[in-house]
Structure formats: structure tokens, C-alpha cells
Image: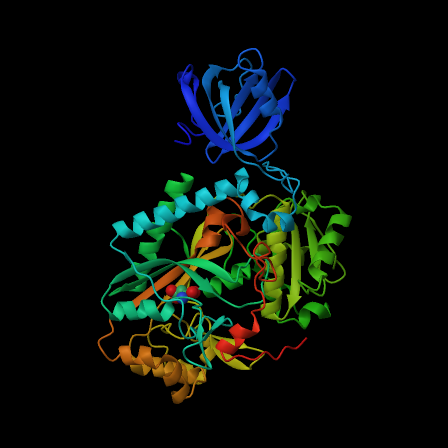
Amino acid sequence: MYRSHNCGELRAAHINTEVTLAGWVQKSRDKGFIVWVDLRDRYGITQLVFDEERTSKALIEQAQNLGREFVIQVKGTVIERASKNPNIQTGDVEILVSELTILNESMLPPFTIEDKTDGGEDIRMKYRYLDIRRNPVKNSLIFRHKVTQEVRNYLSNEGFIEVETPYLIKSTPEGARDFVVPSRMNEGQFYALPQSPQTFKQLLMVGGMDKYFQIVKCFRDEDLRADRQPEFTQIDCEMAFIEQEDILNAFEGLTRHLLKEVNGVEVEKFPRMLYDDAMRLYGNDKPDIRFGMEFGELNAVAQHKDFGVFNSAELVVGIAVPGGNNFTRKEIDKLISWVKRPQIGALGMVYARCNDDGTYKSSVDKFYDQDDLAKWAEATNAKPGDLICVLSGDKNKVRAQLSALRMELAEQLGLRKPNEFAPLWVMDFPLLEWDEETERYHAMHHPFTSPKPGQLELLKTDPGAVKANAYDLVLNGNEIGGGSIRIHDKETQSLMFDYLGFTPEEAKAQFGFLMDAFQYGAPPHGGLAFGLDRLVAILGGQETIRDFIAFPKNNSGRDVMIDAPAPIDDAQLTELSLKLNLKS
Ligand code: ASP
């Protein structure tokens, strides 16, 4: 028996008990005749005491030679601690050690295994197994476990069946590049790793599974924007014989359950917002609604004056920054430089101070009088003491710019409180999205998404205006899930492929299996998928997903611990009938 108790377990009630503990040496203090060692395992820390008087000199010497992160086993007696430590659960007691066994020695770790470590991100990732010994990472992984357990409990109780789907498949169209795997047995042919189990879950509905879920890895070969991973986890779900309302209710239920069980937070019915309204009011399809600062469109009140910049803009739009009239000129200049950075790309920013006495002072006083500015204040809902920030230009661009500014200001003003949760359904997304690069429409969600009833015809005349039965679940300004009601008949699905620029042959080659299935009694169905990594991070009150993933990849898609990806040897290439033609 390696241990009778763990390192987080012993209390005053255990005093005088003989125990055996095992764990890692966190640190030791050596007073010569007495040595204290903090012994750590997943459950906590217990203080060991080696005392020349009460035990033996030999034992003290053994203790003095212990290094950080040595793995040891001790036998001893639980005794009351002279100076108690209220900061740890075992702080009332210590172990008077009678026997010490070194189970394994350790090299000096390259960074301190403390909550606040001296190790930077790179070194921690290289030695991730040491990083996992630290409380913040360990607790994040335990937290993730709790969330996934609750997901499984809830969905199981609601009658969902967890079904595994294959990883070696054919391309699934979720809008990213595929990771591919060469097939040795089928020369010159490749599997693709699933970007999601989308087509399989639809086939499970055709197969009559009725309610499916899976906690599943998905793979997308994208350039990694901050905080994305090439492999990530979804809670993937699908239901048959449902309408959009059923899906929204089912997964609102799951989210509410998680917030309650994991965070102890009760949330009202989730508000719903149309995609068009989200774009108009927040410039963003995943608005953070924990704070106001809604957009006020100013075309009607700011154009047709002598200010050319606004007159020539497609959209003039502003936000009121609460208390922003306190900003110094220097602070405002900083904001202006911020929106002009290439990442944001605004040409400039106009502002108006709302003075406490009800007057205004703007950066364009030459063109706008007090009455004009009062109308700006009305449109942006600005109060005395606020600052109105106004951007102008191309509608889509300017909305994105003002949205970025709104989030930045909210961050600066501390309005994005991690322990406040504001879920929101965003609905009726456009079916298609124009891609500047390929000059083609793409499915905004994926090609299996159904258009709103009666809108199929509109595809011919105004494809960009067609709305889809598609919805996203947004939490605190992050998309945590998204899905749609699917097309379930062959004709509509063929028509969709056609509109998306697939020839009938291409559609058949890529998705023939799905269209075939639709001819054998496909039930109406729909679903959604949550991004588990992000969901866990947000519920955990953080925005970075990396600490909630045991072995994450870096921004270049590398695992620096195992050093992957890596070349393979010639024999392996030959076996796969592959030849490299490297660019560099
Ligand atoms: N497969 C979709 C995705 O990965 C989710 C869904 O439509 O259910 O975003």
C-alpha cells in the first residue's frame, strides 16, 4: 500500500493516527536539528516534520538531502501543529515522520512549481507535465472534467445517446482546410480528419437515433488566430423530429444546468436577438451584452452638413462611453491611435464630450452646433458625463471597427466582469456569405443548413438576402455554440449545392452518401455544437482556452513537448507512396 491517506485529507481529528503518505517534495526548510517538508499531491499539501529529538539523526540527514520534486513515501504519526496554517486544509496538523523512502529522484525543475511560477509560456509548454502539477493548470483540468461530467449527465438524462463517429473520413465542409492522412492500403488516397462530425450525425438521424451527442475532437487546418487550436473539442448534438424552438430549449436547458451546477448561477430565459439587429446594435454577431454601449446610427443627424468625411460615408455610427468625459485629451488621442492601428483600420475618430451642464464639446465643432450634438447624444443614448465616439465609412468595416473599440473600452473600464454571465441566442443568420477572395458565395454555416421557409426562391434573385434557420449561442461576447435546422430532402440539398457552385458530379462525389441517405426516409432534423474548450474557459472565468487543455499546441500548431509535427523517414514515405516536393 503506497499510502493510507492523500496529502489533502488529514485534519485535527486524525491526531495520533499512524499514516503513510506519498507525493512530491514541494519545498523544505532546514533548521539543522529539525526539517520541515511540504509534501504535495493532487489533493493538497501536508507538512512533514523530521525532528532529531523525536526521531533519529539519520532520518534528519535523509530529509536534508531531499530535492524539489523528489517523489517520496513517508510513514509517521499525525500530530498537532504548533503554528497552524489556516491557508491550507491540512494546516492544523503535521506528520512526525518515522520512515522515509525515496521512490524517485528529480532533476531540478526548469521553473518553480508554484501558483505564480517564474516559468514563461514556452518553457511551461515544453515541460507541460510539470506545469500540470501547478494548481492553476491542475484545477482547470479538474474544472473541465466537472463540466464534461455535467454535460454527460444532463444529456443522458434528457435521452441523448453518446455515439462515436470515425476520425478517418472524407472532407467535411466547415469552412477550413482539412488535415489529411495518407492511406497505405489505398495508394494515392487520403482520409481527411473531421472538421466536425456533421454529416455523420445527420446520418445517425436517418438511422433513427433520434437524440445524439458526442464529446468529440474536431480538426481544422487554419492559420491560428490567437487562442485557437488546430484540434479542439465539441459537444456535438443532433435531434430528429424537432423545430428550431425545440433545439433552442434543449440546449438552453443544458447551458442553464451548467451555469447552475458549475458556477452556482441561476440565469433567466436567454434573450434572443436577430443577426441583423446584433450587427446594427453591436457591429458583431456575438455581442457581449453585459454592458450597454449600443451603437447609435447617426447618418440622419450627421450627414448633409459641411463635414465631407461623414457625407461620403455609407455609415456614421457612434457609442456613448459611460463616464468618458473624464478622459483627458491624451487618453482620447490614445484611443484615436488605437482605432487607427492597422489591425483595426479606422481612418480616424470623431468625438463629443457630454458636459455635466448639458452642453457638448466635440472635435468637429466647426460643423456641428449644440442642437446637432444633442441629436447625437439622443441617438447614442449618451448622458451628461459620457463621451460619444463616432466612426464612419463602409458599413461592414465601420461596424467591425466600432465593435472592437466598444470591447476595448469595456475592458479598460472593467465592464467585462468574469463572474457575470450573459447568454444570448443570435438567430436568423444569412444563409450565404460573399467571399471576396474567391468571388463566390459560401455557406455561412455549412451547406446542410436550411433556408427560412419560403426563401428558397430568393436564392435566384438576391442570394445574400436569404436568411437561414441557423442560430448561435453567445456567452459574454464569445460564440460558445452554433447550429441549424438541416435540409432533409434530396431536391433542396441538390439545389443548395448547385447555388454554392458545385457541379452535380462534384456534389455526388463529395456528398453522394448523404443525398442517397435522404432518399431513404430522412426525418426532419437539426442540431448544434458547442465549443467545449471555450465554454469551459468562460465558465472558469477566463478567456484563454490553453490552460483548460492538458496538452495544447502553440500558435504555429506545434506541440513543443513532443516536438510535433516532425518529418517521417524515407521508408515510411515509400510505404505510403509519397514523395516530398518541399518549397524550402
Ligand atoms: N457542425 C457544426 C459546426 O461544427 C455545428 C452544427 O451545425 O451542428 O459548427
